Length: 342
Image (cartoon, rainbow, N blue to C red):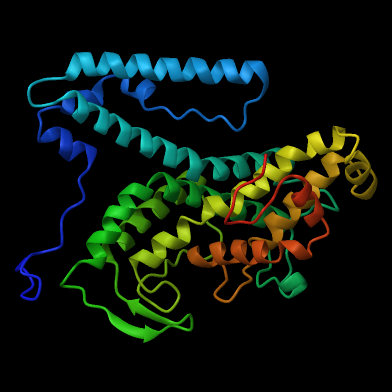
């Protein structure tokens, strides 16, 4: 590209990936070394406790250090220095840490759905059946149909989270594509840069097709909004889907904490007396979320791909009005943009 006259230099530059970094230094053999997995693994500490948890963490950290040292000794060369290898391994570790953060909560919610709900045999009080107009729902689904709708939505979010680094690169290509101009317009959410995102669109349809093949059937629309009033450009798309973990993680953490709260003398009376015990409370929270977090509600809700996420955010925005909101607070909830207190 010609350099802008006002700046006298170009500001666009391709993202440097681990692959291109190593390729330029003749170090691609590192990526096929089996010890890379150990050196770049993520050590998740907040789910472990006590002496056993500390020992497990210390052991994992020691394994990572040994693997890193072995890789540096094996792959360093005049064109690939120790610092180069450390940078590449740290970058791969960042990717794994991101996947653990972004995909972990989705995996947890998939597990909770499959553990606590039978798609063919709903419980009377905990049926996922929806009727349009009831509780703000815009959809009408039987229990079985809605179970499938929620499950396929979660699997789609899981695949997007796993592919987010690639989607980020494609988003930058779309945003900086001089052959794809944008127009500034009011989308109903303020002034936005409305611009087509062909690279993201192709990638999303690939991901969607992969999930559809995996699930075997598809409930609802498969429309992906991009470059319109709902999702004006690729950056808005990225921003929407990086919120998924922030929405789901507090719910999964609260459910995880309920057995401990039920066993604590200071909170047992609340869990067992007011809510009928930990199992019943867990079912109540999950049933409410799986029903009304996927009921098509919200300003641009519905059964389309982006409407599913809008519905989930709409449910989260109304959490403080739910009867079980105090349980979230007891579990350490601070908000969907913050962390849980320890």
